[in-house]
Length: 332
Image (cartoon, rainbow, N blue to C red; front, side, top):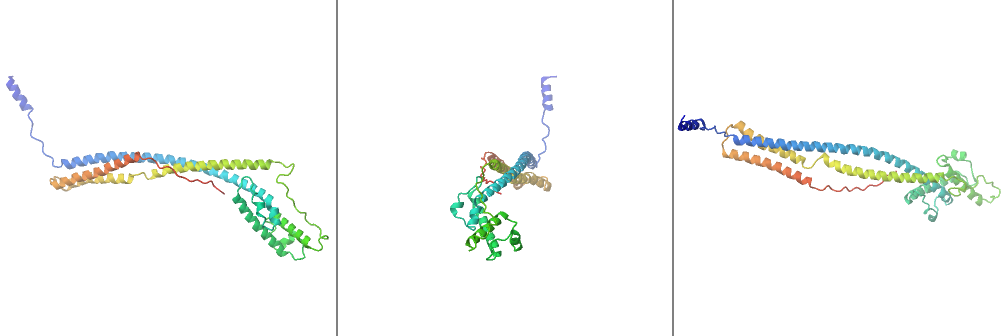
């Protein structure tokens, strides 16, 4: 084969064929496909992020539930020892001052009561106890004196009960009040030397008498220490729970999720739905205005998605707000 013939055959073999037909819908199909790919990718990332946040929130909620159970247990122990300490403090305070309250008919001098604060109590508590004891002493004096005749020095408790006096609520106070009334009437009576002393005057003496075991005082100190320990642990747990709630609450409604969902839906509608709708109405849309509208719709949807991505990027760099919690210990 001559060189000229070979060249002619090669040109004939590699010569371009008839040109491919022009596709007037390439802009719409390309835009729709591009938008669909972007929506799928960004939507998948958003869903995976939401799933990760949901898993993280579930872990925090389980931790919160465990700490709440522990906090309730510690609070119950704190309340138990708080009640024991208060009962002991109230018993000591009453033992110190009930004779003064009865002697002064419910209104003792302030200098006798203001410094009587048992260990583990407070001035607020003792003031409240003083008000309650004062009212009770006054009511008891009034109740007993209202049923005694002017000539009666003393009557037995059963007779007081039959005359409507409550002898069950506080027998010790009733005995002290009746003894005080009897002694006062005995002194005022012209026949005081002939009236026998029915009940001797009670003397309380010191808090811990000679030879008395110091075990109650030691137990009281132990109860105070345990109460303070449980109170400290409870306060620390409540502070930790406040931090966990501060971390878990934002995860229930992550920032920008609503806007991100709106951006993806808008991009899918403008970038995918709108071109497909045009192709369904007119398979060969060639008008310049329609092409411009398709491009603008794609650009608007893409702009919304890009704005969502920028907002998410900014949120990653934000510093979490500090937890400001004012915790007070439980009081019961």
